[in-house]
Image (cartoon, rainbow, N blue to C red; front, side, top):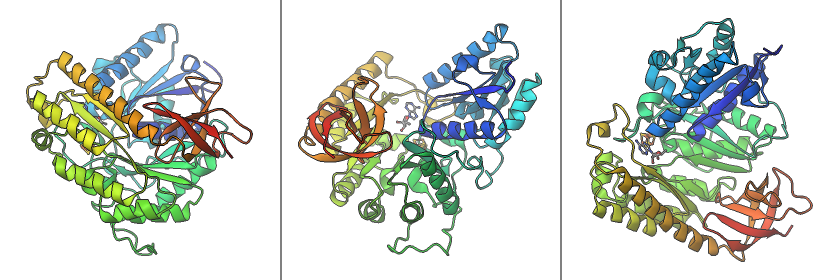
Length: 459
Ligand code: 5AD
Ligand code: SF4
């Protein structure tokens, strides 16, 4: 083992996990450990897991099994688990993965240095559940972020709401992430400022159901006024963050819910310059029967009403979505309804998921009766629809000049650079003088693909 033990984090799942992993890395660095250049040379590997679909869990379990088995060549390797699967399985994980050093809940990150120290002495099977309530600053309280790292992401995530109190029939999140708990606005601003100092001008505020921010067991601090006259917590928060962390040139929030699209929120999106004209608004299905069974709290008409409010109130808004295919009992007719509503909503992008029953959720007691081949077919159909729609919508941008936050050489074609517009559209362009990572550049859009715009820098 090297003199200073080195760590690596392996992250599955959503942006919440990406953000938690970044915080865990900072905690370990603060405790004196070094980040390994690659997982192979790490002495400590932590897997941050997701439970949302079975496949995600299988991947994490496979990874853990491989790491623990690999100890024959790497004796003393510390292997830890966190994330949603850690909470779902509790100390039951140690029977599944013999030799696992420790496992801890996503809200128990403050204990990580202690867990690592114990594991380095050879202890295994340590289970650290979430504390009953995350102390403020809790998972984020890892000290200030280091400044201006060259490889800092240009977009960072800051959690504003832990947990979820909705009870969608298919979703494991409420049982693995706990009750909703809104963070204090001042702690959020501190964290946003720290992310901006690290080099991220694009900040995405996160919550499993972000529009529930401040809706449960929360009172907006009376000494923080709203000059724009907002009364709802999320618009107030957006206004406060934009004012107090002005280096955050772009502010987003995700994931949305149509019932949270209030006139005030739409006004906040339109009138606060930093707030981006983009919303991820999971629809899940376009069939009213399936939506009711899913307990989503809206029907397709109500969903489309939210879309209408956004389009009327926020110029050039991009709306993206999540859809599940093959939910129990989903007929061809239900599926066709989903296709129609997706077209009517005019989504800029869509993520399609094949239904996967999750243990203990209400829908897991229903028969998973849509055959896998049919789920795959529906998935393909929706993706083809989305490609055609994405291409059509993207073509409408040809000839316009957009502001792009440059990210770096594009993965597909490294001679080109890529970045994003405030609509979160990916733009590829030839590098030009003055173009550097983290800079805002003006790009004339000359061509369009279903998922990308192609343009020329015109600064
Ligand atoms: N099966 C398939 N997809 C699911 N999602 C959540 N739970 C399930 C499940 N059991 C999808 C939803 C959600 C996204 C993050 O994952 O579409 O918006
Ligand atoms: Fe799951 Fe529904 Fe919560 Fe989203 S809002 S995380 S789908 S329970």
